[in-house]
Length: 393
Image (spheres, rainbow, N blue to C red):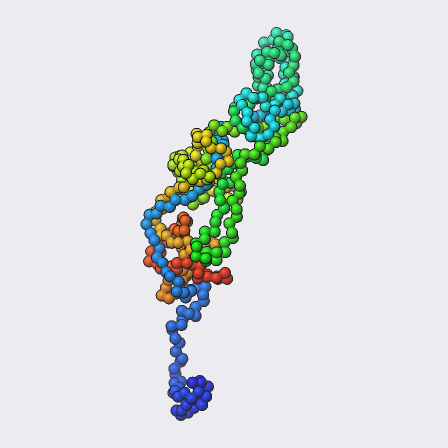
């Protein structure tokens, strides 16, 4: 029936042939309340038939994978410096990480101060003064050995070169070299996008994960120090790393680092051999911010010489979580610094803000009480790339 057809008596519509109905001047057209839910904006609620799930609760044990690297024990490293200022006459170190022995001659330095001190020694010895012991002690502090001092007194010949010897066994590294001991930061893999296997996890807009950087293994590069170069007194020239005791450094993300304690046992194995399982205790926990990454390094001190510096390691750390509720990661939508789940209300889903905790494997911990909620099993099915979610909390 067409509403523009109005008559003063009963009849039929001349257009469609339907019977005319009486018109009440005091009545208003009634609205069908069944379509109210369909007329609300999609950023406030979503009408969908996606399955709804309930959150799980209780204590859980998850094993988290962490990665590390074998490096030198910094407690055993020593530094070599020149006791006098002068010019390097002879240099016997040719490349970084060159193996050396304790007492090995590293370089010879010409020093005018040393020559002047020897002249004073000869003058004091010639005049028979009481300052002879003080003059000898001064030369010893400048780096001369007792046998060399006695040789100067015996022959009256001045030694213009001061020998510099190694004070320990190990591998020598130039202080100004760019090659450093490898760190666990290089072994950390880039965070993955966490694909859920349903083909919709990529809708979160996460960029593809970058490739993990290669570990900084020791490199035998030539030393930059050259013969004829001048050094100052006390200038640190070389560092000696010892390989009799190595360290396994493991990098823990912030969420997992809070549950690591000193003395805790770790099971780890070389990345190239999963069957070679070893155990060790955490000896040091160190928060680190490096290369724009915030993580914690746990060090396991090793006495086993079967490892080599730069070797990659993997560890499996079981962690017990208690409290909160657990949902699949795909059921929680990340909106910047907010996390949203879609709560089911009758035939529609309402976006609700929740507080999240630990993320392990394919599950995420929810701190908000959602024990009585039914939520969408996959939140990413309920949005598109231009959605602006308006939460109802």
